[in-house]
Image (cartoon, rainbow, N blue to C red; front, side, top):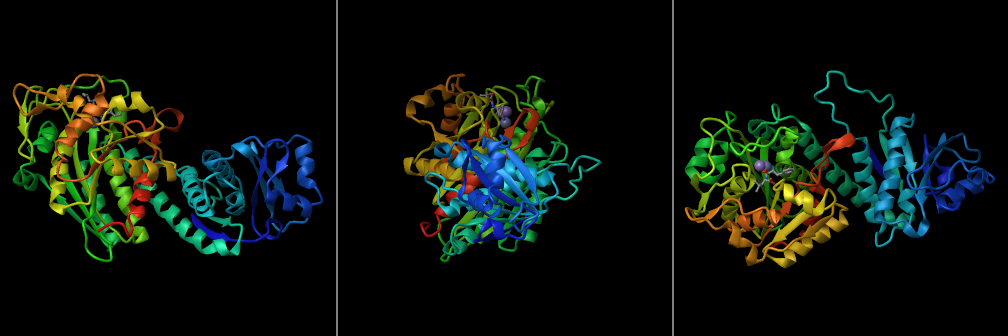
Length: 499
Ligand code: BES
Ligand code: MN
Ligand code: ZN
């Protein structure tokens, strides 16, 4: 989809459709008011008759409204005016775009971006309008033999800003939104692909293809012999039961004016998690194809960063493999040596994410990073703690933890910080190795983060547990593209800060 920014009166737009908001209680938005005036009160008449009550997300499509130059006017309910905040803005935008995409308008001019949203400037509204619009039209039918054809899909959206002086900011915001949306689309696609297609090799090949598409991006893919050479005994222990060879993917983007210490993203790329010998129950096991969504968010975020040519240095690391049972698989009680030299007693082979991340975190040391953020669908306990709303944040540096939470708030890709106190480390004690890979059930997400912290002592580090936020179950089953918006927003905020 294509986006442009414009400033001007709604009744004067020559367009297939003009989109304006209506609040609850018969309160017209400023742009609806202008259409109402131009049409001699047609809009207020419709509202008086009760055809549009202004409930959040309600839509009413009108044709040939007199006094206007557009073919159609779409009224969108905005809910109560005093409750119209970021979430409501996004939800109204989503309803509008869904309707436009399903009806005959291949193009439209949207005035919702002119509405006041608490704490959010016009640039925020434009950026989010773009992201939400792209999310609303996303489809995944790569694996279907017949693609569902939308007859006249929405091709172009023009977003209106209140003043001509807002145009420049608006255009930059739209570009940011579009890059984030492209990154989310990529993360969603990779997540949605089944485990028999999206293998570690497939991820490596996609990364290589990305470097061909974006010359500013350098990609190196390491295979088993190189990983053995590096001493990644923890990562490799997870691959033992699988016939699919592992991949370790290194993305390098150097956009900073002066070469400096990079920001490093590390993604968990388990392309399927059966649990290994500590095998998972059959119910819903198919969802474990999403166990590479951390890796997918690294792909997506790097895509957004290169598209924007951001002035920062970013490294992306992805450890990719399958977790399978077999005669050669790692067994509970096995002890392995990580790249850091620390030994691990693997008491549960289903706690495999932390084992692959351990070595990836050690690998990150070579970049002398300014900060390292890992992203992983790490624990079922995260879903119990924060549900499907917020990503869990853990950090050995409070400023970094808070910056990530703030970026999540800005991006409406929300995250919440949990503690990493020493007290939680005790459960990982082992009689046979330096420590075990699991503690008890209590505080499972925190003890998992504690385990990771043992491999991240040499730099500022944060861990994002996206087990509850990376995909949706039920009718809307599929990848969400989270936390690409959070990560991109955080990285862009480091432009000029990085040194
Ligand atoms: N990939 C899972 C975590 C997961 C489970 C994410 C369900 C989303 C939904 C991870 O590898 C795992 O199996 N974790 C175990 C850890 C346990 C053995 C300490 C878990 O959460 O049960
Ligand atoms: Mn597991
Ligand atoms: Zn897993």
